[in-house]
Every structure is written in C-alpha cells, then in structure tokens.
Image (cartoon, rainbow, N blue to C red; front, side, top):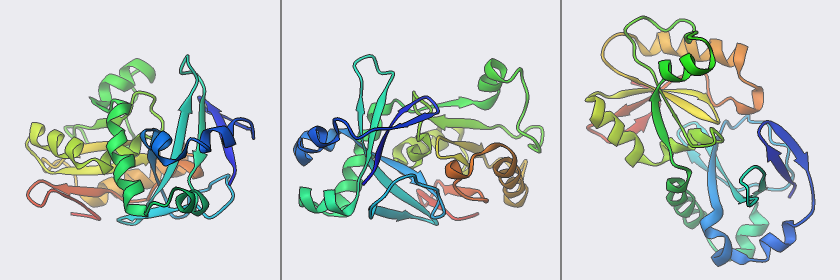
Amino acid sequence: MEHHMINTNTHIYSSGKTRNIIDLGWDGLKDYIFPCLTSPEGIFQVKGELVYSNFLDLRIHYYIRAESEDGEMIMIIWIDQTLLTEWDIDLQTLETQSVKNLIKDRYTIHPIDDILNRSLDGDIVPGIPSGCPLYVLTNQRAFFGAAGILDKGIVSAFADKVGHDLFILPSSRHEVLFCPDIGAVTAGELDGIVREVNNNAVEPCDRLSDHVYYYDRVMDEILMGK
C-alpha cells in the first residue's frame, strides 16, 4: 500500500509516520476513516488491493485521514485488504463507519451562482438552460466532497427543502451538482453537459461518470437515471 501527503492540489509521497498511525488499530482510527466516491476507471497512484464497495456504477474507496495541527496538511492512507484483515472487520462495518464520519466534514449546499460570482466572475456552466437552478454539494475543504451523496439524509433534506426530485450531476470526486427537476431540462441534456465538462475541465483521475443520476423523493433512492 502506498500513501501520500496532500496540500491543496499538490501530491507529495512519503513513507514517514504511516506505521505509527496504522498501529493505532481500528478503535483508534475508526473516527478518521472517510469514503471517496470514484469511477471504476479512476486513476489511483497507489499500490495494493484496495477495498471498495459498489454504488450504482461507481465505487467507494476508503481512506484514513490525519491532519496536521494547523489543518493545512493531510496524510491519506488508502485502506487495502491487508488493513481490513488486520483490523478483523468486514467491508460493511468499514462503509457504515466512513459514512457516519461524513458529518465531521461540514457539508454545505450553495447555489452555483454564489460560488461562480465569487470565483469565476459570474461565468456559468456551459449549456445549462436559463431557469434551471444548480446547487453545489461539497465539504468544507472541497476535497472528495462528492461522497456527500452517500449520506441520504443530506440529499433527502435538500430535496424536501426545494420540494422536487433532483438530478445529480457528477461534477468530480470533489463535488456534485443538484438540479431540482422542475421541468426546465431533460436528463439527456444534462448528460451532454456532464460529458462536455469532463472532457474540458476535469482531470481524468477526478472524473466520476458521463451521465447524471436521479434522486426520487418517494423512493428515497438515488437512481441511475430518471
């Protein structure tokens, strides 16, 4: 298993401190384990047999996250089968604990206009029809924030707030977009937008899929499509 230190978008590989962290065991580490939503074709710069769960046509990988005291540096250790065996736990236990820990990442949902006006001088996502509201779901670091949709409480609460089912655009591993289904746009149109953004603006390792997902309020489920 290989691990790396990350600071913003910089990946620095290191072998220091890892064994000391792992030696804390499951009880010492379970509160620091998080999920990362990925594509089955995702590019991982790691070695070993990483464990994963399936989520629709995506995968959930898991990692230990240790932060420096100032919060500027994060050490990530991807969880492989060796660690799972060492901890004597099953995959379901790992998944349940990681999703439970998402609450620590302080997920937020904001209108995309607010974010674009702050960072992109008001540019809009190409191809989105006027009158189609978009909202960004991510965590406080905007890091592996797409995993927020694994907590159905986050998704259902927002859908209830806007009073509509939701199209979910897989923007990247770091965030997803919610589009309330108010009849302003079709799934096919949104699929085209996702493909365009993937091809022009998202690194291959961060891409999830080329199509939208759909949250049905009655079923309380995220589906492959409407």
